[in-house]
Length: 334
Ligand code: NAI
Image (tube, rainbow, N blue to C red; front, side, top):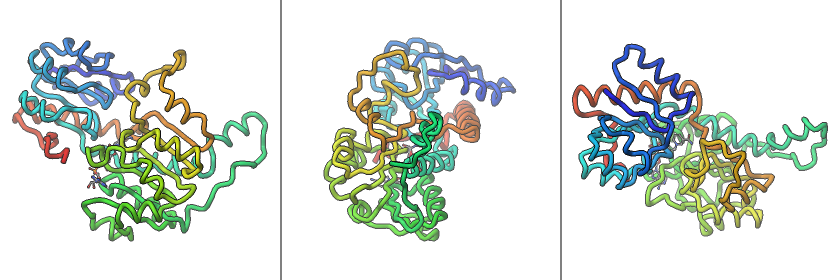
């Protein structure tokens, strides 16, 4: 199928070329993000491929449909950036990669936890400067502490498995309880009980109207003093201003983010020569107990191989049958 791949980075291009060696798809790599300014570039392409920071709002979808696009292939699991009811109304099929490596994201979540706890980000700089003191670097044993996982789907379950391996007590909240998680020794509790008991809270649920700003002033108030909060899911699950207040009062002892509510204006680009205008983000960077990565939890070789092969397979299946098991429908938003 002829496909315009928007927002392509060089590292992704290599994977697409390798997985399309048989030449079954005609792939064109475009550097710009998809938005209302660039949607015209998709004219004549029955398929477009996009990433999490592309704009798939109603005006953009209307432009794509008017120019002959039939299929939108998301090279991501999350689809909160797509106006699905509008896509459905326009007859656009949206497909995604529901699972490519839950291990990649779960392992990065643990990397943030360990780095924050043992202050690896600070120790690294200190030692490079010849400062071998330990003041301010004290951590705590994860063994015996309580981890609270919000969302025990593919990623949450792998995370639970790792943390149980550390000897942590793992509790979780999810409207759908998972028997495989229970078999690991994880206990489901109410959201309030999770906030009250967890030393480490990890967000692993999707962004939906229900989870938008799930972490807010009220939920932070319920948490243990000095709690560690980790978000590798979607930025808007956390109210960033409430978290700033929680850090200032020391209620939040450690904050690890791989996603940020306003990341679309920042992440995946080199802005090192620019003045960043987002004051909340810049304030977060000033705390010694905050560690932010720029949406890289998925970024392993194994995950990219899966993302690209599943994406090309989604496109092939749609081309041959007009359908695809990995289609996203608006009921998934519920
Ligand atoms: P999944 O669909 O397998 O699991 C999500 C779980 O969250 C389900 O068990 C669901 O019942 C639960 N859930 C839904 N609403 C909830 C609520 N209100 N409270 C608690 N739990 C709720 O998804 P998966 O693959 O585990 O991914 C989770 C999220 O991780 C994705 O939605 C995506 O936003 C994020 N993600 C982040 C990546 C990164 O690079 N940082 C990469 C891949 C995914």
